[in-house]
Image 1 (cartoon, one colour):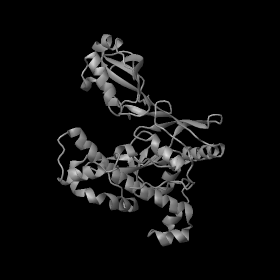
Image 2: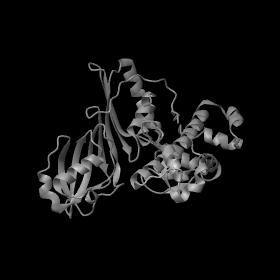
Image 3: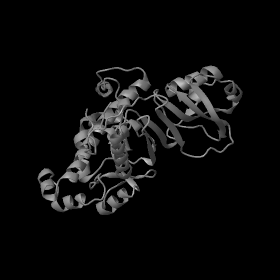
Image 4: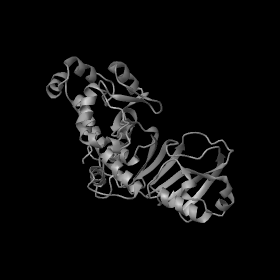
Length: 361
């Protein structure tokens, strides 16, 4: 499956290694911790370990069961991660003795409730690109500014699909009953990969539509799309690169509820102001469906899984996101381009990096 880039610049040559010096992700908690309560909250730094490996190490040394440890999200093995976990306060003395060469407890506090999956505002990323020429550094700076202003498609990253990129096929076979998977977590993971695959296919089509509207005039677009001419004119004049369509399911950004796009002109203005964003469907029995023209496009990609909807949890996912608090610096003496940015939860820094450089994993 080939994801379509939003923007048309030529590839920018860089070297990137996802290691603990060049890739750092720091969680941004959903709320401030109260400083009191029966749950011990730890700010933990890990290097080159998955979240599960970190939790297992803490469990083995402290005696706390892994299922008693709360966390907001799972993090990749590669790179350095700073994240928050919670555990019952009664294990505090054991935690004070904790030592691990790849794990360090940076801070501790307390809270009334256990941290749960999703209790996360977003993540802040540091990425260092190497072997960057002065000319390419200027290109990176300009494209990064474009992405900060216009946003980028919120694809699921390569991590979801496995080394051979075929996890989604296993998920489909499980849904079809052609394959058995006794491990519930792995079963859900493979089915999630299938859902993610369909989402990416749909999003790539929406990116293609955006590129058409950016490149062609109204007459040419009338030859491509079977839309009323007045609608084509309205879509064409939307201020953002990403075009909204009648019937789209939108979401208040970065928090709030979903709603249907009925007033295209008004919602396009709010989208340009980053007050709302476009969503795509994660297919399942509870997923809201788009309507109108947007619904017809969505149906083309998700109708293949209609008979399996009862076997999947459905939802809507941000289809378009914007990096926030962006800064960058070029260190010419090292040929390094370093950048920091925030992304909402569920978004992949590697997807932004691919859009930035046009180099795919």
